[in-house]
Image (cartoon, rainbow, N blue to C red; front, side, top):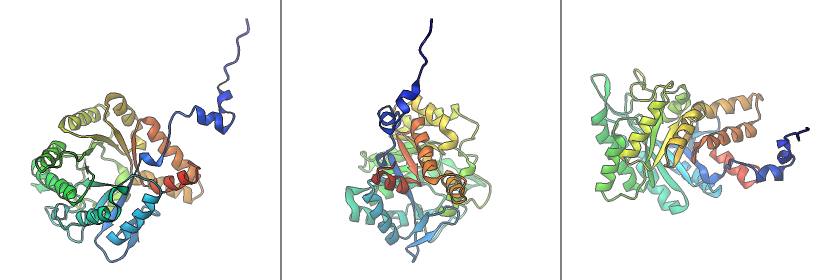
Length: 328
C-alpha cells in the first residue's frame, strides 16, 4: 500500500501562507528600549563599545524619546550616570538625581505617550562600582535593601511608571514593595531582574553606565551561569515578595531559562537582550559577516519564541522603524 508523502512545504510556498501559520509574532508593542542619561553639557556622546548607542543629557534624551514615541514603542528603561559618586551611592536616591530629574521632564513633556521604567541599582552611583553598601570588603545585603527601597520610592515620586530592581540582593522586591505601598504607591508595578546571571555579556553596558567594579566581581550576588533550577527558585521568591513582571537576563545565551520560566510561572515574563548580544551582532554586520536586519529579527524572534512576553533590547529603535515600513 502506498502512503502519501507528508508535505509541510505546502504551507511555506508563499508569504501569505507563511503568515497564516506563523506561530510567533514580533511587534513594537512588545519592546522596551534601554537608554542612558548622564549629567553633562553635550546632548549625546557615542558609546564606543556599543555602535550607534549613546549616553544622553536630559535634553538629548527628550529628543531621542520623540522618535521612540513616533515608532509606537511603549516603554523605555532608564539608566542614570551621576556627576558625582560616593561610597553609599547617594546619587541613586537623591530627589534631584539624574534619573529623578529626567523622569520628571519626560513625564511632563510626553505624559502617558511613553512608559518610563527605571533601573533600581547602586552600581552606577557608587565609587566602588558594586551594587550596594560595602562592609568588610563585601556587599552588605540588608543595609543595601534600605537604599534600594529609598531609590525606588524616589523614582516613583518623580513619575516613574514601573521600577526594575537589578541588584540581585536577597529580599529586595519585598523591601521595595513595602516601601511603595506604605507611601501610597500600591498601583506601581515592579519588574524584577529575577534570574540575572553573572555574564561576560555585560562589558559594553558597564562602559555605557560607567559601572565597572573597582575591585572583585559580582559573582557573589549575580547567578552562576551553569545553574538552571536556581533560576526557578529566584523567580519563585520574587513572585512571593510581590513582583509583577519577572525577567531573565541575558536573553540569547539563556533561552532555556526563558522557556523554563515561561512553562513554570504565569506572570508576564521579560527577557533582556543585553549589550554584549547587541554589540556582537552589530560588529559582525559591520564586517559583512551577517545581514544586520535578518540577524536582528531572527535573534529577537527567538527570544519571543522561547516564551518572553516583553523584550528589552537595544535594537528596539530599528525594529520600530522596520515595523513602520511593514518589513518586520
